[in-house]
Length: 326
Image (cartoon, rainbow, N blue to C red; front, side, top):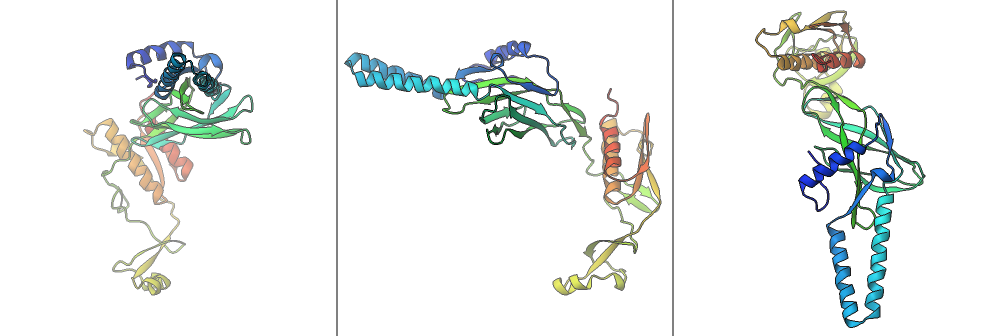
């Protein structure tokens, strides 16, 4: 897929992109736009502007009107100054990447790009666009010499999602010229499997991890207030909330427990395909973490001991995301 270029057919735009890609220097996590990497063409407004100038010039010559000549040369000079400033709006712009946050398959990954200027000059209304994402705008001012832009990219499948090549362009200040460059930075976003919406229920000491998980309760730590259910102890009624709303409500308490569970690949039906298994296990991990359980993960060629917390959840989800990948 080629990025759109002003007034050029797609075939020519793809040819220019392939030619420019061969000239891109090797980059890792940072790069700086220099003159030889910045391209510029008049856009539709620019073409109309110069056609109007040509018509004015022809009329001035035909009627020997000196004011017409002066107007044509004045507007032409402004147009060419606009071309210079449009080009300079990208020149010396420095880009570096930060680590993007993991997302689930089907969500939009946001790649943070840090912006600064090597010459302490302003870069205003600079646009960034990935191949299948929308364009987003950012700027670097002289007073604030560093900013950040988030480039969106749809994560269609689990694993590592590379940002790949993206386009940086601007039409500032007059909107008559389109200056652009292509950039490719080495960064990727971890994409977890899509959590299954209707997973199988994992039995755990009479409870289920899944849609109908019955939360373990105790008398140690207050957790939340929920709607009253028949059989709730009167001592657990939330009298202040009842007085305020007039609705019976019950306090929930979490109790410490030393019980552990293992979320196992081998508990799933043999005829279930790999992606479906990973999706169900992903849902089980999220549910177990939500309810504060100590859980482990057992999948082919990898075993993660039971634990809890955000770091443990990330380790389990990362193992599922990279399953079967080099």
